[in-house]
Length: 363
Ligand SMILES: *Cc1c(COP(=O)(O)O)cnc(C)c1O
Image (cartoon, rainbow, N blue to C red; front, side, top):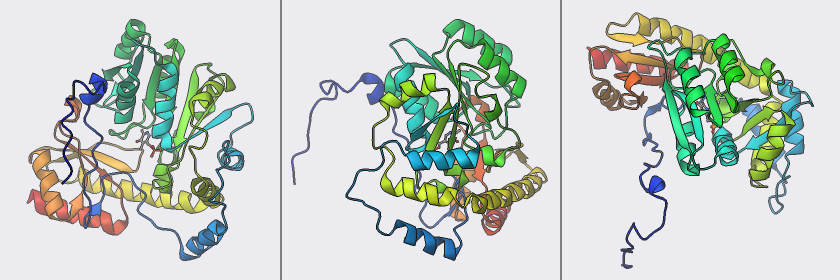
């Protein structure tokens, strides 16, 4: 056996904030119905899979990818109506874009801000870059507390504000007028994160260009390509040309560029799947709303947050795993999420299995 290093953690010179962090944990899901990570549950039609494999044949893996992803960006422009007055920044998932933005914006003492609870990466990235993170509590119905936001913006003058629109893990869309006011009163950058736009009935995208400090972020993950890792940020050149400097030149590989282009050419397949997911979400919501001791929260996403009113959330979570269903336990992640769990929308079969398991657990 090799000797185990006994290097003292104090001597390691790894920053104390990093040593104090818990690494992002992914729960083991093998053999379980996986409804914990907002993944699209549908696979591709067989003919599309075959065409894709054909498309990949002969890709030059010995060469570096196009550092600018020109063709992919043009496809994104065509499919999402992105005009040439806006720039696009490609990221290895929007997680990387959050990190890039924060790397550019943080100086010691600068503040990153978002409503809370929201997407955990905003806070994690702030810790990575040594910025201070401020979470402004949402109202009890998960709407934005505008007066608290106003006060926090005034007090901290955040370098960047992150607004998930719709929000994760609560599932709701913030009031548009509230977002307008946040963008208007902030002297820093506002990143509107539209990871779930395909499932929502509103987008902030049409406001791009109307505010100097607004950028909009999207991802292909929730659309059905979580395994691919492609996010994109859209905004004015003044911002994006700065962010571009911090992006590693080959962050989007040959396989990702080719596959994303291929998939976007067939966007209608994913849009149809998203429509099915939305229909299932509405069905699931109605059943949950009629389930004793369960309170679901309205959702504009591909998941539903719900509160367990009798059985402790952690017990319900464990019992669901015994029944073969993995969802997400949000209890203890934030005071506002006490006894809350989050279920991603699966196929009709997955959802029925979840409902049957839930009924058993609550019996
Ligand atoms: C899932 C999620 C993301 C992360 O997307 P990736 O592109 O997979 O990194 C970003 N923002 C929100 C709000 C999310 O829920």
